[in-house]
Amino acid sequence: MNKDIYIFSNGELKRKDNTLYFETQDTKKYLPVEEINNIWIFGEVDVNKRFLEFAAQKEILLHFFNYYGYYVGSFYPREHLNSGYVLLKQAEYYMNDDKRLNLAKKIIDGAFSNMLVVLRYYKSRGVEIEDKINEIVDKKQDLEKSQSIEEVMAVEGNIREVYYSCFDKIINKPEFVFEKRSKRPPLNRLNALISFGNSLLYSAVLSEIYHTQLNPSIGYLHSTNNRKFTLNLDIAEIFKPSIIDRLIFSLLNRNQLTEDDFDEQLNGIILNEKGRKIFVQEFQNKLDVTINHPKLNQTVSYRRLIRMELYKIQKHITQDEEYNPFVARW
Image (cartoon, rainbow, N blue to C red):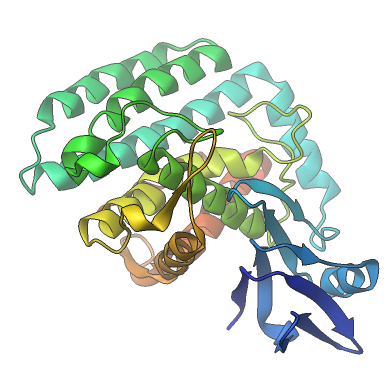
């Protein structure tokens, strides 16, 4: 079974013959190279060309985060499943305004539907948010009327604002109030959790794209511009409510994360190393959780669901098979 490695310590990643190891001042730990899909790096870690060549050969992705927990970038080895045909079809659907708009609407509709699943779950447990649910349902109609990507993004922003306004009632902890969305830097603890969780999800989706024929630099909701990757941002929108938001609610409601797991910086608040380790472990667990898939009549993990979503996008652009986004049923 392939797995991910998370590195929080400072040190150096090295290659020796056909093995990889991580070396700190005190220890040397060999890594099971044949089993690794991704290495997530949060500490100050040095790598050299010799190491990266071997990682590329073994199709291992590296994801880098800085001291503040912000995503810095990924080492994305040369695609091993490259398809010129799929790339041309991706570009065709991006350049055609109607085709791109249709896909962007589908992606955001999937995100909205999953937000409603989350809110209805907590409403069934006594959280008084019915008015907000109705407001989102009403605003969903604006999505269908949207005539451009800009209008779609505006509707998305309006609905997300309503959705986030429910967080305080769901969490009900004064030390984790939402106030408003703030990113770089997050201005409170809840925003720090959302930003960190979303960064992890963007990287996880990117890792799944690597195992398909899709090119991560061509998205449909997020514009293909100077950003290196955009398709992962698109697909992450669908899964944020089910994976990241529910994970945050669980961590806080079970007191797995407290005020002590955050550090106040000059400009904002970040998760400290202990907090990040807790979040990362639970994130990993969440991706590996298996759920019953109604159509397949079998259990699949969230990680597998993300890969399946990418396959659906690929079929949509190469075989004209209508794309319908994943919507959770739990």
